[in-house]
Length: 229
Image (cartoon, rainbow, N blue to C red; front, side, top):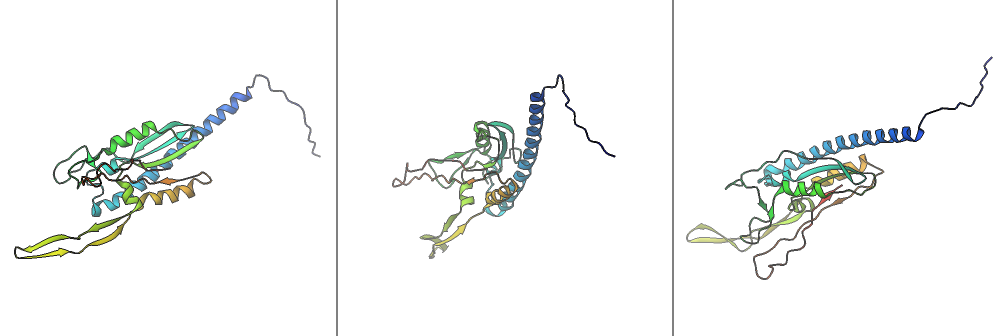
């Protein structure tokens, strides 16, 4: 014979509200730690992906590009953890090692200076997230990365005279080819699947160049920084 009897039990001195809050705080801490580990892992994949392009296309020949790669996790608008792909590195540009690069190094004047690590540090200090729950983000702050990520037409030749011998010259024909290295888009697709049903988005900004030609001078557009989150 089995007899099941129910009785009322009164628990004295137990603060259920405090217990609930403690459990919630522990759950938030555990989830934050998981997202931090995830953000770090994906950042290394992203940095290594970009780094695999570097050798052939000189993307990081000054070091400022990958110096600007950073990540972060916020909760309710507060930064919980953040970091960089690597320690700051400055590479030789063939002439000198400098703390500053330029948006377009072929211009003699009106160069826009780029200091990758400073841009990343400034961004991490200012980023506040959505203010509701967790935000996980990755960002490349060197503005010229927007051209590699979004794609552009690489132009060469065209009215350029090649002197084969003093007495013989010929014009190099104009050519154009599409260049695009969508490294961050891979991270976006992975994050969209890994973090669903959370909303994910990618933003790529390409600042307009400034020009020394009087026709175009002072027409540079507003520079904005790209972020993937």
